[in-house]
Image (cartoon, rainbow over all chains, first blue to last red; front, side, top):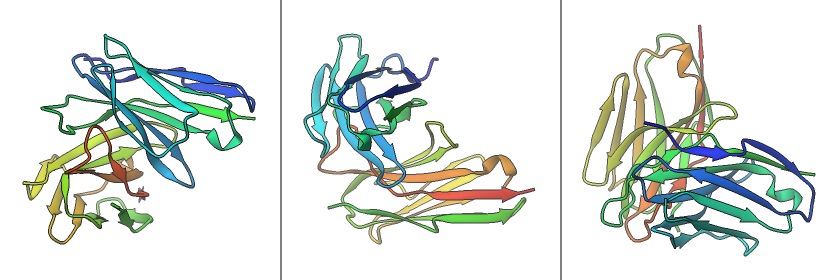
Length: 115
Length: 114
């Protein structure tokens, strides 16, 4: 069974640009969550999608957005990039049961560097 | 506001030792607690999931316990090996705000010396 797949694995952008990251969940998982990991702040929750609807959102500015498609694949977008957006972006999928948080399975992440 | 703390931040042990990693959380209204392992530059690997109604879970050389009333969890690693070297993270989901949201600790960086 394939795991969570994230693309691209590495990317370099400059300030002011925008970026789109992609995540394919484990087959059958309908919940996809996104996290930002930095050395200073650790792992922070960005948002979660279930059946194409954003169900939960962390404390990040509106420059961070996402969406989920009917096949459960998800994308996140960061617009007007800032130096502080440099981070490892991790996607996780979960076999949610009755709306509760099940076990989360993470991808390898997308390493974003903003110059 | 839920806060998760892991102590120690770093730990170095000789191969073969049994060790315990600690995780504490401030709000006992959790739905579950999950332990992860992260190798440098990699994603997170799920190790154990404990539901709030459970007291412990075991997988191979790993045993995780949960004491919800005191806000503590421990991860016990038996007969440590150099391959166990990694950062170990614990995370909790809230009973009232679930939907894929985990609150993570800062992690314990474990080094097992041959």
